[in-house]
Length: 101
Image (cartoon, rainbow, N blue to C red; front, side, top):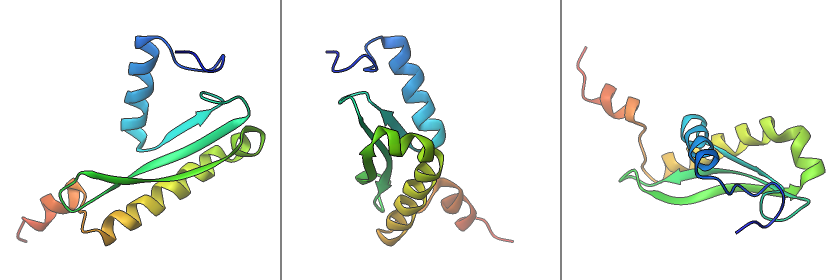
């Protein structure tokens, strides 16, 4: 269902968008659900590596768009910090923990 002219409606675009989100660890939405509204979000993981929540920043598109890169970094860093507090350890951390030097 199309909400605005920017709503993703094709499967190929959705696939590409999901791949980008997985690669970067952050989702940026500009005018996709509501014209004039934007959001940036990053997942928060628990100790079982399950998504426990999200760190999201929302605001008017004309204010979010010029700062989207910075806001994405802030959301991602904050989500990572909360995840760590919940006991989450990134794959790299888990691998290195099992190694002996």
